[in-house]
Amino acid sequence: MVIERIPSGIPKLDELIEGGFVKGSCILISGYPGAGKTIFGFQFLLEGLKRGEKGIYFSLEETREDLLDDIERFGWKEIILEKEKEGKFLIHNILPSSIDKISSEIIRYTNLLQPQRIVIDSITLMENAWETCQDIGKLRRSIFSLIKELKSKKITILLLSEAKKDEIGFEEFLVDGVIKLYYLAKSLPRALQITKMRKTKHSLELIPFEITDNGIILKKII
Ligand SMILES: Nc1ncnc2c1ncn2[C@@H]1O[C@H](COP(=O)(O)OP(=O)(O)O)[C@@H](O)[C@H]1O
Ligand SMILES: [Mg+2]
Image (cartoon, rainbow, N blue to C red; front, top):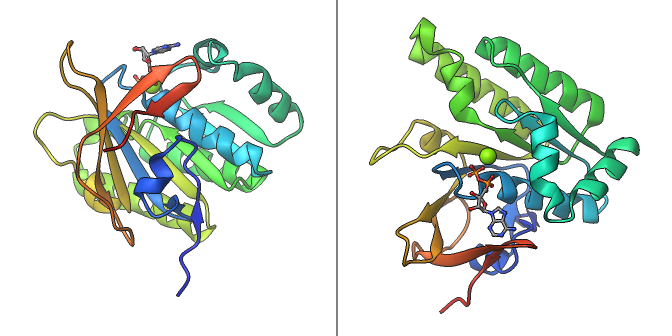
């Protein structure tokens, strides 16, 4: 069976994962605030745009305006605005509400635009929206069925997630891949670690990376 892969948009990362993310898979990008999750997400979507694919950035966190401000520095704002006009891209803000409302909004916009790639920023806020109800079983089932539906449309999904200390969240079981973004200490470089990637041979090493004016760049891989 041939596994179709799509480039991640992060230079050199694809070499470490047999050529890219498995098409139609769901990858969790986890890290503390400032780790580079949003930048990673935009690089992933921009790579799709370069290849004529469509993309949506669903944000429960930052507003559309703040996100556009963030990416202007990298020279991405103009491309995004242009592609939005062409109907190939969307930054869509979702107000935190019940998990079912969030899910149906994601599905509705996905059906409208029919993207090949989407980013959901963040699953942590999706879960928080549900916290008051405390029915963790229902939360998991809802997130699981949302992901299942998106994957059935062959969409490749990046789920951004706030890192939890020394704890494996249920999301890590749910997804096909997990990439952790770390900043370890002042004197050490940022590093990422691929801790799970179904159907893929990969190492568990810490891979140093930098955030530059061009976005995330992996440093020399030993
Ligand atoms: N031009 C730049 N050069 C270097 N680092 C940058 C640049 N722009 C942003 N950063 C770094 O990226 C961080 C923000 O990344 P972001 O993807 O928004 O993080 P997250 O979404 O994980 O909270 C900033 O805190 C800063 O450390
Ligand atoms: Mg962010």
